[in-house]
Image 1 (spheres, rainbow, N blue to C red):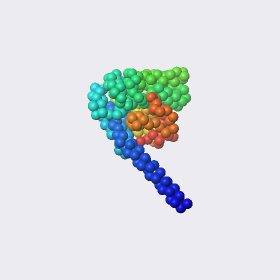
Image 2: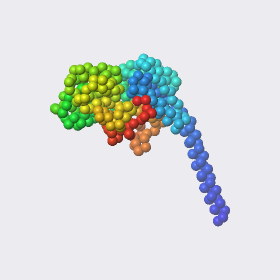
Image 3: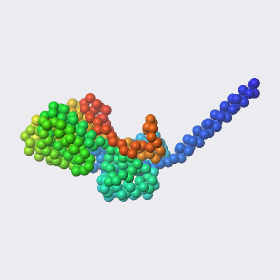
Image 4: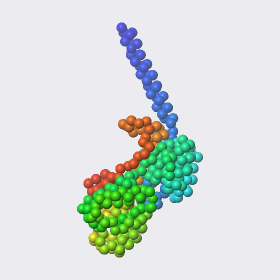
Length: 330
């Protein structure tokens, strides 16, 4: 009886040891997997791309602290041509994943397609390619940005008033935003769109166009600037004009300066809509998960979704604290 008992304990110990050895071996096997992630983004040429650089650096540092087996190479580029060279350089460095926010679609498509076809796990962020050449595409909701802005402005104006619009750079995403905005406004016959000009997502352009609008139109009730960088120029022009007729100024993207104005109860800037530069950070996480063959907890498919569109979220004084990032560049 006694011997039998010892044998049982010993057997249990032996089983435990075997399990322990298996566990250690599997940990070692996992530990051997080193991955190199290449990240290619435009240089910070305005507020939003400044935010892109900031969020990319933050995601890289977060992942490095979690997993020492991840290696990242982050390259910024001032032009599409420089970005093509950057992707070529990353391929030479034998990256396992490429996370790219293309400068422009046409110039970058051939090189990204080459990377993708060579077996590099590819995540394209924000500005899509001319043809599908990626594992995952992640972007903000461009039609949603226009729709959310229009619905809020129309409601605040009680369906009546005169609006001026400042568009972005003439691109597919700008068209999507503007079309969705105009579609909503069609439902409000009491609202008149006085004018719509491209401001190229630039503060300076926003200032110039708004000066022109203020000279041209004696009454303006609301301004949709589509973008927070443009809105800063619009606000400056309005302040300098000394006029007091405008009731609403609405930008887009959710920059910290504009969110701070909402938090502080600014009478003109009372809402905004997200187009978050943090999408690059999520893109980097998707690249890491993709090369590791992982998906989110509770996601029952074997692969990550091929397309992710982030919601265009309305920011008001009630929820602005959730979006305010004082440390961010943007």
